[in-house]
Length: 378
Image (cartoon, rainbow, N blue to C red):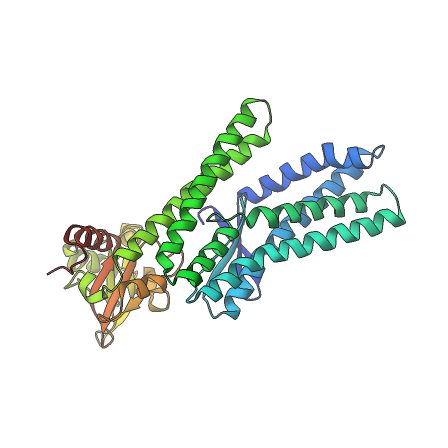
């Protein structure tokens, strides 16, 4: 996600934090310290409320992290590639490959809300125990607040609408019941759009009536509607591409360039004649070694282009999505690395690049199949 930085690793998975997280922590701490704690445990100093509220906000963010880590751990147990876990103002996001079965999709989706519900129940139980030992104590109030927040998070995420976890659960159940993954994606996406629109309307009405949290609800709804719409469009494209192989979708021949050339020679001898903004690179044996984006070439200062090799600014082969001409397009897109910067699949035959599939190629093929009733292009 743009605007996020890596702050560590959790079980081997990169953990990233968006710039909005500190803002969220401050807002949570402010509400907790100014309203919730004074109402529950009155008569304490401002310092106590401030320290306790900061601790509570951090604990809630740790709960959100646990929610996402549950998704990541389950995904890895189901042999899915997990790119990273990102915390941001809307909660968290785990980027991973698409599950290959309805069962795997269900387990990955339900693991996060279950983690939140377990944490919520444990926190409420602990809060009740602390209150029994020391009535109206700050730790008890914090644990109770944390418990209800996690229960709310778990229940909210189980609403049957994408991109919420409940939408993923619904998608997995429909996929299992009908055997049609694309239809299940479309139904879950439609649910997300409807629920997101309702959140926007209700949130805006609340905000207009003087309830500040209504604005937050409207923003959440807008995010849901936009994300669900994108997922519905992705499902439509997937259905249109069913049965199409990379060899039918690729642009060929594709311009390639030696990865050992300096940037200035590569621009003059290779890049100026290319039709694509991403070019495959080959090694001395003519085998694919990675790809380079034209914007990366132009970012090299002119005075350094004679000294910098193209391979030094390229995306290495390990981070490049490849496929054979016989492979189905949908299978290759499922393997597309999350956050790879758009659709880009290099088609290789015998280790040598023979074509490239970009977002433009996909759009053109989808439009062609719609016009011709699904017949492959000539």
